[in-house]
Image (cartoon, rainbow over all chains, first blue to last red; front, side, top):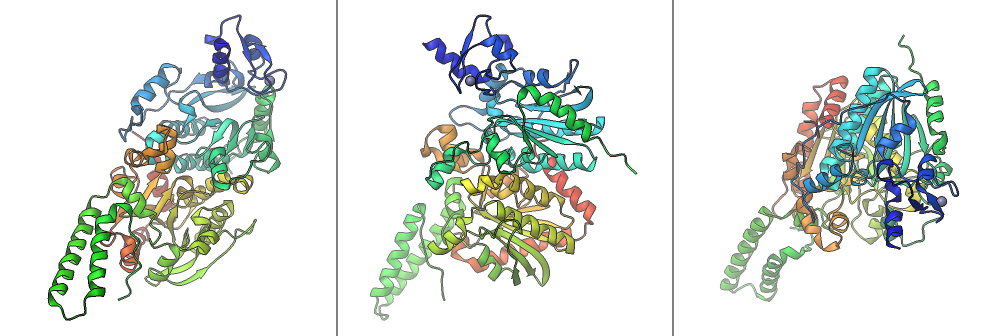
Length: 282
Length: 319
Ligand SMILES: [Zn+2]
């Protein structure tokens, strides 16, 4: 029983490296027992209920970019400028996150092609401190956009974040205008900006670059919102509607262009990039 | 002689006791007893000295309480005391009118500006009307509309920030709270006119930055500005609501800390004992500080203004 609950808890963050051949996992949505390798071969989507599991940045690059992409270096930022500690030191939390993740912070960019179309792809990894936006995420976002401008190609971001990196205090809040400066520069260069909202995208990330795309895509079932559901419930003391803050709910309310199944995501991005080709300067 | 009504915070208890003693002596004294007059003067001086000491070393959590003081001057008070000729403008032209964010034409030292800010309300009825200063998407979309109007006619934009945060509710989410905040922040960054933001009470997270991505950002001496409320940080990071004071300290929410971190450009001093003890003086100090920043920004053309604003935010977090 304990192995099962352990597996269930880690389902959202499975990656190939630590999946033994004979492992079964339970879908957190429908409860179906799934053979781990088949689940991954199915892009970490449950074949029975279509639940889209959370995937790592590395897996996302592999799923969306053609072979031969380059992962871009993560810019360095001041570390723990507030000398923050809650129950643990922020530097210790960072160390622990880095020990269990391949990249040094929550947003990583790669440059490559999508069905032949050049693009810079940024991916936020929920496994790294909940994908939270601090200075490293803001700086990586800016660097990804700068690379796209230099390469005269589009920037695509797959968002995932519980919100702000609270351990960086106000400096994390300042990443909202900072990343918005970058999206404005991309627009000024006439280059496309596509947002793929993945589960979950909330807080200051949603209220900045995650809502500013030329085209807004959401993955099925993804939780997307500004305020957390518990905060809303505590404020209004009402039951939340079914499907509240889910991708389909946002689509119904006009907040995203489309909800795209993971198996169709790469082709959709390639198709969109074809339509959003840079205007020739006159 | 109309002093604003007093309302003491917990940490002001010794001051409240002295003031109560003074009041008591005043009402019991028949007016002829000289030694009572002397005693009153002595106690009043002691109270003032204690106020100076207390406010000279407020903790970040105490400052949070001062920033939220029910009698702290709000947007409507500054409209009356720091600006003239206010013309309120309403509505987002998309859905509704949100009284949590007010705005309109105003004059500062006779010069025209677009004034926008949160209003929390001052009694039960007005607090409900203004939704306690917690704006919905239509509030941010009204701010966008007013900023664009200002840009079109060359009026500098002045914002007064005072919110616990954007409203967390079903209808706010349905109508795109996140998008409204993102677009409002973007609208600040796109302005071709000077913009000065002043945090006058609480600068609460995304609901604040949406109208604070300015060329120059000022803070009143005892206001606070943070990514999440100290209570929120306490319950998430410490997993208890009890650690709000620690969270306020750890997050560095005070004007003095944020000046050191180069997140703000100036601190506007408050009268002894906080803005609520002398709103007129506070408004005068604020008007002077904003006017002085606008005068400096007036020398920049629109390209330079855009560039300065972008560089200001790009620099935060860069090595
Ligand atoms: Zn399932």
